[in-house]
Length: 328
Image 1 (cartoon, rainbow, N blue to C red):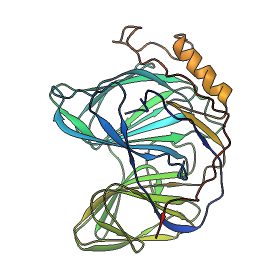
Image 2: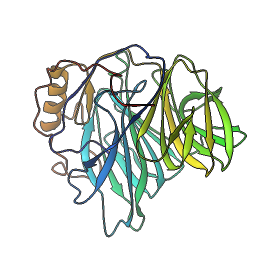
Image 3: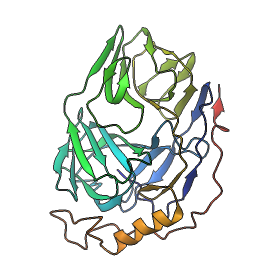
Image 4: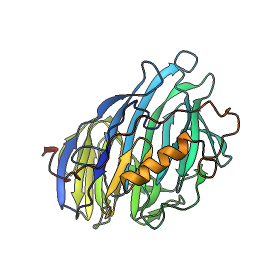
């Protein structure tokens, strides 16, 4: 999934230091998936007072059990700059095609990582006969020194797993307690899929300098003394050496974290940049079919693409972070 709102808001995200340990809930908001009637996603990031967690700057929880013949959430070609997209499906299959020649099916248990760098275009289509899909899509903001690199795509069918009594943590990207993912990471970061057994009470080592957050997908989970269920993001702040996790019922959750992102960002539509002019230039290149930046995608005629929405005034006063949320 991508940001397909017809009139997306601009988000100007000011860098800020790590705030220390916290326990704050940030509810997801329901967002229509543009061009797909009746389909919505739960947008978890960015939030007004929590635009990023480390370099993680966007998180959608998407899901439907409807057969693709009844509800086809096909997403036509659209562009990205300045970010990595991380697709992590729980069920369903998605066909990914992009402007650098990738043509793969995305399946549950496989990490799919697209690094846009200076620019890439891609499409996402449901595979005929498969469920419409349920999963997560994240964006990771590329740091200034890497955001103009050439685009590339990687798929990882095997990912390392950290096993602790009552906990299985599949490391999607970055490193967790000495277990490292093979996925390309351009800033200090971690993303992990957590399965917590019924009755488990386990302590997970963390990187102290990172800020972290947990999103519960299924079940109920107590995180550092705070009870959490599916839906809202539980932001944990930084300066934690470990995280105690317990569940009476068993739970499925995702942990994200990283070194606090030390750069101001401008996020609009499917672009992550640093200024209004940079975003405007990317939009113009997409609308002008600039093949030097956004090449055609095999299998899609030139006219089959999502047009860029109207560009708002992005010269906004940056918003302060870490001032909101439901404090616990």
